[in-house]
Length: 332
Length: 284
Image (cartoon, rainbow over all chains, first blue to last red; front, side):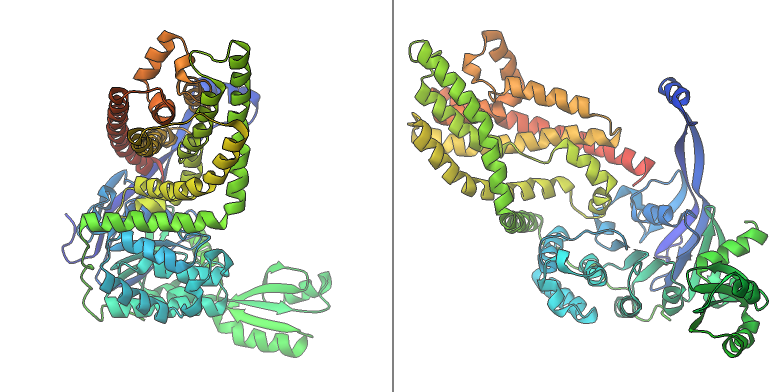
């Protein structure tokens, strides 16, 4: 049985998909008509964790690690193959009304709004779907419009909004029923930096105001740093790390990435850069280098003083790259 | 950084079921009306294009009637005109969410979004398309006017026929929506079912009164048609207005529609339950 106090309790959760297997060619195609071969793939392979009321947890892992599959099981879109999931005391796969009225799943790449109409019309629709009484609806709608700075946006047809504007409106629509469990799957994907920051500060504020629990997946480390004290890292469907974000950083992100733009970039210059740090990749006029975190200031200073640098940025390596590197030497 | 600063908010209070459903349908219908009026030009061209089919039938049957002494089985050119002009409205009322739409709905993740809502998604389709029908009826009136001037229909319905017709076109809409929903849900099991859909549409074409008024079909075909739903979504509403039809037949027709609505609703409920279980087992 799930922990009573936890908002989300997951115990030894597994999801196995049966995937068709077929060789290339006509012969194989003909054979598959008679006998279909499949193989079992465990997208989620025995994970356990709990999330408390009001906690904001980053859910990290490389593509295909099982994040979205887990979120779908948590929100009731997928039946687990085995193991237990409880959200607010309900088993999500039963899709009980009482639970659906209290959770939301926002997927950064999905659109649930009426494309040709102003968002206000979609808000009205959600009001009817979630049976929100007039007073509470108006209050919540105005709060969201204010917090997300939606102002005039809600009067424009959704198709006329930019990607970032649409995402903000999408988030507002998903929260009109004031859910206390939020599953956010890449909510800032494709957004510019300002818009990402806006979405982040909104999530933090919503969490503060309503005590909501948030499980967030993102490829942007900045999202995770701004919002999550705790992170769960999964890979190959298993939990690899569950704990403090600071501990994750120290453990995984030991390097820095330096992107240098050089007007006279050629093969000789690339070879020369190899003396400063590990060359990760090159583009038309820029090179991406990796250096140990401690060496980053020294290498940056040398690059700037010794080469004709047009532009230089120092950043943490993408979380996926860091995690992949760690996995390479530290199998799960 | 965030944490459990305030207690978790209680769920919002809930409106009563009946009031909420009425609001839901009103909102969805209004939304659909606004949306469809934005596409009034394309809607109109679509409807005008659709007129070609009954006009061909009408011209063919009128010619046959004239060449066989003025009528075929009691259908004069004027009655054929009435039949096929009313046909154009009934045909539009029969347009619902098709099985082909289901595949897209599943592939693009809209169904997953709907599964997260505390509402059966069929309400969305029923209400949206009903809203669209309001637009269609308004746009249809001038088309019917032009066809009336061109083909001079013989149409003298009684008040009762008018009332039954109005109820029957919505009954037809409901039956066809429910049955095509069931057909569309086959997508939960396989996406290669276009042959099945086509078989359904061919049977419907022949046994609904769309191609030929059922009164002109052989007796056995009429008996078979009476046992299937197609007649009650197409031929019956037209005949209810155009005639000849007596009071008993009108009531039997409405009764048959009610029966098919119940059958359709039960099928939707059962297949939906099994289908969603499958959908959530293999991938949302």
